[in-house]
Amino acid sequence: MEVFQVKKIHGLVFKLGLDLDMYVGSSLVSSYLKSELMKEARELFDEMPERDVVLWNSMVNGYAQIGQFDEASRVCREMSQEGVLMSKFTVSGVLSVFSVRGDFANGRLVHGFMIKMGFDSCVSVCNALIDMYGKCRRAVDALEIFEKMNEKDIFSWNSILSANEHCCDHDGTLRLFDRMVGQGVQLDLVTITTILPACSHLAALVHGREIHGYMIVNGFIKDGESENMYNLQTINALMDMYAKCGSMRDAEMVFYNMSNRDTASWNIMIMGYGMHGYGNEALYMFSDMCKSGLKPNEITFVGVLLACSHAGFISQGSKFLVEMELKHGVVPTIQHYTCVIDMLGRAGKLEEAYKLAVTMPIQANPVVWRALLAACQLYGNVDLAEVAAQKVFELNPAHCGNYVLMSNAYVAAGRYQEVLDIRHKMRQQDVKKTPGCSWIELKNGMNTFINGDRTHPEARLIYPELHLLAAHIHEHGYVLLL
Image 1 (tube, rainbow, N blue to C red):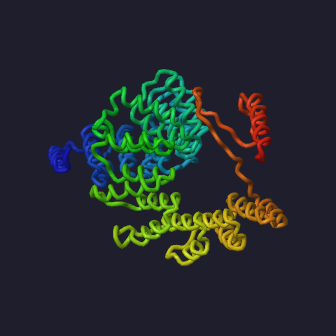
Image 2 (image 1 turned 90 degrees about the vertical axis):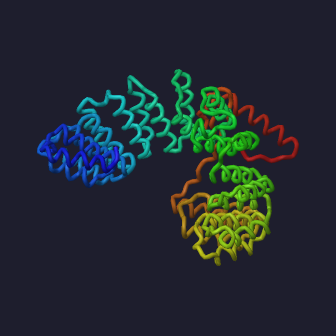
Image 3 (image 1 turned 135 degrees about the vertical axis):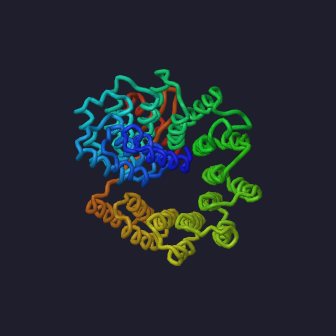
């Protein structure tokens, strides 16, 4: 309803003396809320002599929907002070506020209230609770709620998938997705947009292709008109999945079947080519993007510089850094300087990389110094490595990668006393090395392996075979550290 019409009706209602009637007043408040006229809605709400729980819920949800979470919380407190008992709709609205704010403590209190009032059997409230725990990075609590639900709808599944993905448990996301498919739950667009990033992070190409096939079979995608059947963001996520899984041919197929592309579409392809060492293809794609009339942004140049770094295009990369602002109006950020420093370091131009790190107009962060440290370790320049390590230890003393890189540099130089000193420093700082982790996608799903972990159900068979393979490799003159 248009704002003018709402105010016109309000004037008529006032003239007839009906504005203080609870049902008429509630309808007017709801109309103002839908038009996001919070000031008018609040004034009318405060004037009403009688307010039921439905009206209170409208105010809570109205503020929550436009992002005024402090006001939504304040209305909840007022509601409690006036002795109005919250309904399941109030609980859902309040939980949405705490979800966005990541307010675990108050979310937990609402959970307790919800159990006390018997709302824990309500599917919509449980879904909101799962969402709240997920956004507060409490995946275990979210899963506990999910498993206790007697009834689960598509929103329940989407909420728990989102909760795991928000907590970066990509492996858990795929396991839940497999359960969802196994139970015959029909996927929707939200499911697809949630699961594709998990496939991207784990390079789960088999899962990704299955989802792509599902999208085609169920009419989410039609060749040549992808973005009309489904939003562009999802098609970009599909393309990003293929690029991050290393299947640039599939990414190209999605890209060239799109009749409309936004900047993100081009960025994904440039980044994908650059990530996998296809420097020329990345630069050709950048050139085509400029010819298409789309303006490159900061992310575009991160992809371009990354491509130059991985392909060893030193002169082109340096030129792009200079031209970014002059030619394209994009001011270089710390990510762009990091890419160039990494590029110079990979090429063995350590002094140039160090000079750029100390002279660039932005203060170098731990990532910059770690990139330089890695390059120094690669080329055995222990003196410069110590300078970079000192900087990174000052800025980020708890990162285990700093100590590992410096330790490896000392090992390569045969300076074993310094290796012991590094390990002692790690113990002093209580820094623990994150164990190595790898995974492989087979027909029965994802198999994850952590260094030193023997909990895999097939460990009894896997490790003897691994040692046998290592013995064969050793016979051919290779030395492995297992």
